[in-house]
Image 1 (cartoon, rainbow, N blue to C red):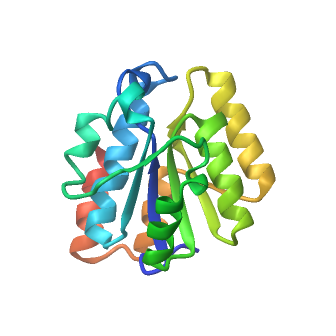
Image 2 (cartoon, rainbow, N blue to C red):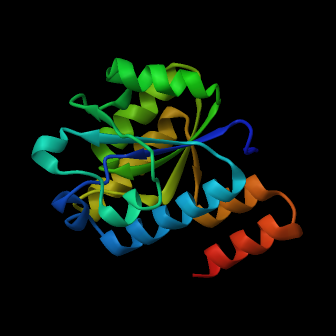
Length: 180
């Protein structure tokens, strides 16, 4: 079970025009926004990456607006773990459970998840917060990530697992986010 004190949200490469060309882009964006808003309420830190932003553009504005002050780690390797600055920042959070969201599922998300597992992290793939240009590649990426040892979850499942109890202001706030 994931807890706010042990969890980090990793958003991988939701950038530029590519973000609009993936399978169900509106679902991807809507669910990542829910995760971001809820993670703020639950004090879950966020780590953001951008793949070659000079060529692919920056993180989509609607997500960036929910992360003021969060500077993306720029990378050229498909796996986030291939970038020393990413690994430095990841280790600085001292969290073992990584909620993974982003794109593309079968490339950067897949390679990152496998390497995080190799490094001993518990990877929780948020399946409704990942996508690829084709549904087939999205589904293949999810299957391969699960086969490598990651847990599968969804936005709603992860948020209620982090929350644990159906009472208080946090519950009310997260329930409202989930209902949107």
